[in-house]
Length: 103
Image (cartoon, rainbow, N blue to C red):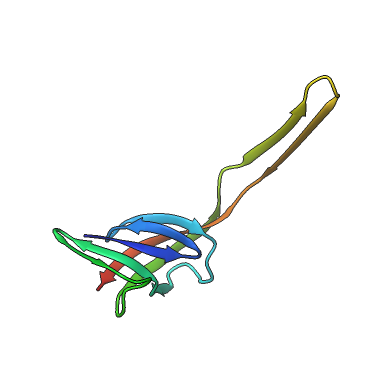
């Protein structure tokens, strides 16, 4: 069984008991969150597709912790013009554990 869910603006494929890293969510570690923007649920041969979302379908997940992602480095360079710029950033992420998918 799996589902495609819109979590914080990003469509993500999830399975029960999976651990995901998604963009930062509000919620403390140990708190339970519910996402109701489920686009698709597949259970074996049975597939349900929403237009755009499935009515009555939801995903329940538990917040594990908050973390920062790997450093992304941006380097701009123009040859023969003495132009070099270096920048970088780290995403704020939330690690969640999917507890159940209801359809």
